[in-house]
Length: 408
Ligand code: ZN
Ligand code: ZN
Image (tube, rainbow, N blue to C red):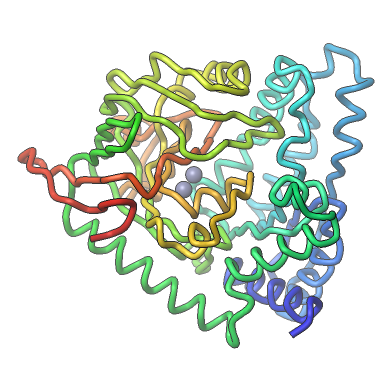
């Protein structure tokens, strides 16, 4: 099978498995300029599936850098509110959302972290109404990846650019199951397995999880009425979608006030264009009280200062070390991939869908159950082949869940 065939399969998987796009539904897509060939194939399959209208918003890394080079200082507190309001309006009127990821993970690494932080905060505020519809799963949405030159150079620094792009594409196709004879049915099978694992955790009703690894001794209390999820989800509009392609995780909502101990990251985090490496954090009563990083610490501190909820957890996710993405041994410098190679936690906004009946609850009711609220949601990886995880019952008994990074 040649590259074009695999690209076509990825587009089909994105439209039919990731989005579950319905006839007559509108689609709003964001895409790096370099991903135009994939965006066009997705557009083709969306219209073949009956899309009423496909709008693609292209982003360009070079133009982003020009802003940091030449825009007036005060403009870094601005964001195009009209655009984000428009996106939110499209979602409210029934549009689906697809994001193609693939931008340079270190695009803004050499820019002033204060400017990067202000720009991100302004964007987060403007995007909030649209993002809420996504985090509440009111609409069907998904994210897929496209190999770009800058990203490929980062993953395969020793290879010529052309070879690096080729290898990154192969890794994306494998992780997205597009190298298999029937990717759509392979996804259905994988989805069923993830749901079954989530069901098993739901039956246990653990009060907390205990993570142990070198540099990590962390107890994460789970939210009252928490619900484990994995694989696909039924969106509020009644459509079944798989929000991330690839996905290997089962995840739930931690209790924002019941996280204690220390934790160390096991992979670098690419946070909106800047890299943060070797994060070490200490929690007390759910709140980050100490945070260090060997690289990008200023960016980390700014992220933690985004708002009060940025210092508390909004997600905990379990991923076995034997997942296909982990087995590839690659560091992708991209959360969509790296978070599916390792167990992880996220600072910031919780998913209300991970609370029983959560979509019907008010923000106050969600907060009472322990669900965190924030402008940010940032996943970072804590799992490794040396990690042990126990489930702690409400009686305080520890039951082994993972040993040396894998389910037992
Ligand atoms: Zn996750
Ligand atoms: Zn997350």
